[in-house]
Image 1 (cartoon, rainbow, N blue to C red):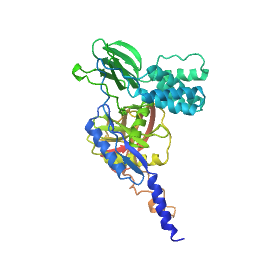
Image 2 (image 1 turned 90 degrees about the vertical axis):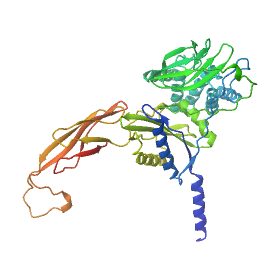
Image 3 (image 1 turned 90 degrees about the horizontal axis):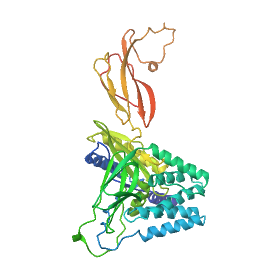
Length: 470
């Protein structure tokens, strides 16, 4: 029996190694007010932290994101959608008609991703039909959450689409709800320019001749196509926020003409932004497949005060195609205090890889969730003049430091039994005790949370800084 123990240990060790999670860290996106240098520094700290956890995580190198294929040249044969994407959509639609809904969902997802990987050649009518069937198939399988997410993504892709007769009333109601939810989300503006006479399309919708401006575009992933007067094509994937997104199409010059060469598959940049959605999921699938990884860590670094940055992050699980929201972390703009936050983030990542936890609803906004940790509040040396200190955070309100002076009452007469020494701190009778009380309201993600926070009684006024956490 004793000889078997070492063999069992070896087997357990081999099994543990084989079960390590393969994780790729997508370079963190740079948000409002943050610098590329700060984002890259924090990205590097997180990578170093994850490397130190090699017993549970196997870090893989991010794939090289190739540039988009060259635009069409005048006079050359027209490109079309990839045969793989066309085949996947056809297989998905056939499976749907045959009531093989699980096969339908898998093929329709693949077909939509393949079609939209090159916006210049995508069959947008085919994608529209595929989105409808994808949501309907998910409902028929009882996957209500996935169906609702598909309807949200479809409503973003085709906001003016009207369902034809024949769909169940519940499906129509859910589609209407998806459009209403989308209407409440921030809108952005898309400006498209290009060669004179060319026509601009957004998600397959004809916007007219360039230059064009669409001012009410739902936030999230969208697909731009510009078509020239001689059949030239330009395509670009964009992420719309509540700001202006500019696209400038170019078809190339006559000197660049050459023989038509079969286009190689292009790995699309995941284009991580403040919000992740089903479009992000589609691009991450190809990203993870390129390096044979099971998980991806995505992040969005943005400024929350003059001296503070916050990183909103999430894990993406390829097998279940879902996002897991992680607790945001905050650090100074020079990234000098970020080591501890990188450690906390690494701890949470390991826990979520082992215990899956709650799946995030899409779209997931990485820039509005409350950050981990507290807010540093500055006190005056004079306790009778409390300061109003503005808390860090995207939607926080002011808190007030209020000094309260009290005098300890005389202790009761000795009843013959002395209490234990550690039950109460020794306080001299009649000595003033200063108690700092922080009152305030913290507001995050649209909800107000009020609280009172106390600090241990002291025998003299407090000076310096204190951290209140809620």
